[in-house]
Length: 104
Ligand SMILES: [Zn+2]
Image 1 (cartoon, helix red, strand yellow):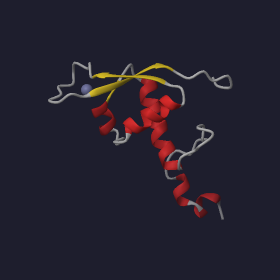
Image 2: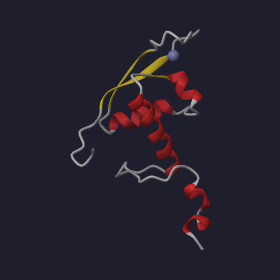
Image 3: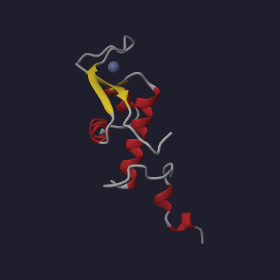
Image 4: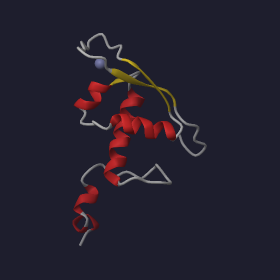
């Protein structure tokens, strides 16, 4: 019997190592956090509506978590001119990653 068949839920989303270290939240939460991380890394800024479209309604909480881990993330009004927001929407911009002596 493979490990996967014993723990179907464990492999439902991209496995990947738990890089959060201490104080680890549940796996599913980590996966969402990693998705927020990736969005921030690959864009100058990520609009809150983009995060909703990516099915990350708790993105604000994840941004908060990342900040506690040392990420510098700016919150500002959405500046994407292709977005036409009827209401005030924020975007998150990654300013700097935390210093990680062991990382890439
Ligand atoms: Zn926007």
